[in-house]
Image 1 (cartoon, rainbow, N blue to C red):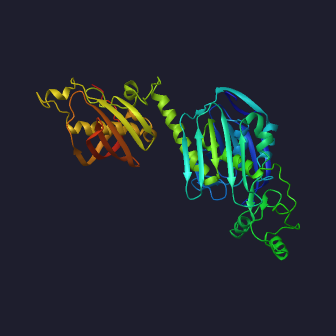
Image 2: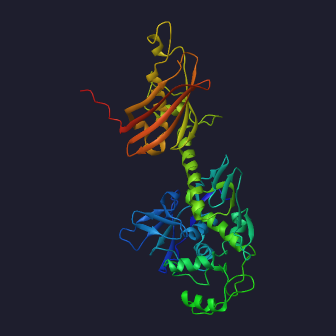
Image 3: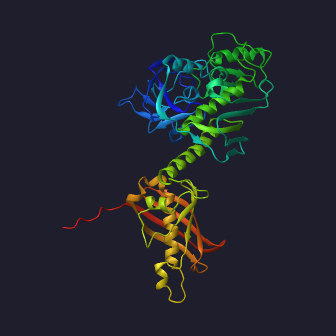
Length: 471
């Protein structure tokens, strides 16, 4: 496993026809600096706009993975990305002079050979691995898809497909070493589709660049002799077509016995490139497709962004702690006596957070609330929940230390039990909405498992005004 980032030595190009659009296109790979990532550049458009290869920019997954930004799109990027990450390249510029990369032979091999011709160059910076340290599970009941990421010290993919078709049957495959297996065992695996899908795509005006040379077509309906000739004319094929004994159109010889399963692993590898970081994880996938791959990649990227944020503020790793007191001081502008969060113990970025407030008998508010009967003011419990919620905005606010949160409204506030010295408040806060600079959060506070307070809060996030200079 490589530990240094990599780019390519020199530019290299590959030309051909796009699968769905049928456009002629040239793809040019160029070296990129450290920590640049993978970016597509549309050189056929004014200003050469670029689209980062990140899951945030996926706009369609109907017949491949399409990236977009505004009105700019790039179709069917998964094979290109599989070639890049399969060769463990971290930083690269991918110039493209049309809307869809060339399909080649339907595999990633043409891109792999182009990149190998360019040469792989090691860079000085270390790879930014995302180490999966907990199980992440995506499931689609409707599509019967399961994809799981499990902790491990390397990167592995295992894929199972089952399409209940005699020609395909149930297949599985496993990739255990990118360096040793990717180029020979997975990059050559071609795309496959069923005949009924081909006919539907053709009727929808797609696969304009498709042919029997760049896809394995599996026959999934009865095909009489008359149907074969009408199909040839319908698909505008110049060559004769026929059904072979294995259920494929023409004399297709599979490159691997389980080539369809290997191609699914190739697609998954390309879609996982959209996480934006190389993974150390065991990926198990049953019946994956682009839609499920992308949803899974979103889950993984969210974890990646959360880990990056935690590392930015939490310098010392502590068991059961996401952010300690020192980290919170670097996140929130609040200070004594109104910093009311001691630590964060759970964080699900942009969704949920759990904070802790240890209530000491030395709290300054107990002196006046109430003498001889100290009770924490309910408004301060709400403030503590709001501060906890403010940390939940880390990914959206940008520079939280230079922002202030102003309450707009507090709704449905209820105080069910008094909070007294010695109590530990566990504050669970969920994000309900965040639009522009307005957020809505719902908080609940517990002591010893008992609900003591709850409220729904709206707040505006505003820039912190600079200090006034004395004259």
